Image (cartoon, rainbow, N blue to C red):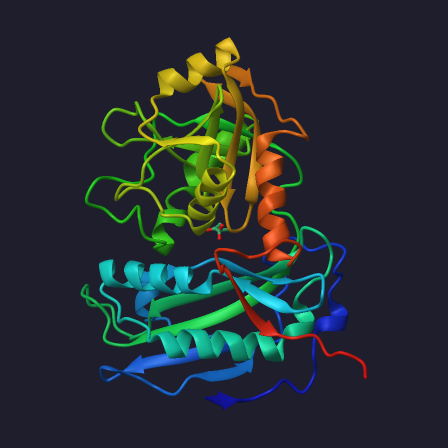
Length: 354
Ligand code: COI
C-alpha cells in the first residue's frame, strides 16, 4: 500500500462540539483503482480532489454504490469498528447488481484499518459521537457510451459525526412516490436510490415532517423503510418489522437490533405490515413505540406518523424499549458490556503511560 501523509493536518480547524453530519472530512482517504481487469495498488493520501474529466462514467449513468459504517472510541481509548465485514459484504452485493468488480477483502480491511490508524485522532470521544466511514465504489472510465464502465475506483473517506437527528422524528406515510420496485435495486446501496428519494422527502419536509415511510410499489399498502432507515414498531408487547425483500436494504443496525431483541427474550416478528395496521394501532394506542434503525441515525424514535393529512402521536418514552435497545448497542460499541457476538473489530489500542 502506498502511503502519502498530509503535511498539514486540518484537525485543529474542526469544532468537535458542533459536527454537522458528514461535513468535516478527516485528513486522509483510501483510493484504489480497478484498471485493465485488475485492482491496482491501494493508496492512502491526503483527502482531496477528484482526478477525472467530465466524461466520468458514474456521473452519467449512476454506476456507483456506497456504504455507511462507524468506528467508535471505547471508554478505554481503543478505536473499534462496528461489524465492518458486514458492510464489506454488502458493498460487494451492491457492486454485483450494478456490474462493478468485487473488492478483495484485504484491500477493504487492510486499507480501512490503516486509514483509521493514521486518522485515529479524528475519532470523537463525546457520547453519541463516532467516526462515520464512507466506503464507495464508482465507474471511473471517461466515456459516455451507455454500457458498463471498464474502470472503477474504490475509495474510503471518513468524517467525525454527532447524532444524526437532534431529537425524535415525524414521518409521513408516502403513498404517491416509490423508493424501489420488485426486480430493481432497492436492496443495494446504489447512489441513485438516495438521489431518487430527495424529491419526495423534500415534499414531506415542506409539510412539516422529517422523513417518509416508504410503501410498496404496487399498491402502496405495505410499509417498507423509513427514509434511509429500517423501521421497527412495538405493537402491544411485540416488536414488528417488515421482512427483507429485494426492495429493502438489509441494514446492519437492523440485523444487530433484531439479535439484541431476541437476546432480551422480547417477542419479535418479521412480517408484512399494512398501512391500515399501523394507522389502526396508532389510533387505538396499541402502537407503543416506533423507531428507525440505521448506521447514521442508530435508533431514532418516531413521535408522529402522518397519514392522509392526519397526524398520529406515538409515545417516545425516555425509559422505553427503543432507548433501552440504543443503550444496549451503545454499551457494546463503547466496551461497557461484553461483546458476546464479536461485532467489534479493534483497530488502535490506547497508548498506556509507563
Ligand atoms: C446510513 O445510515 O449510513 C445511511 O445510509 C444514511 C446516509 C445516507 C446518511
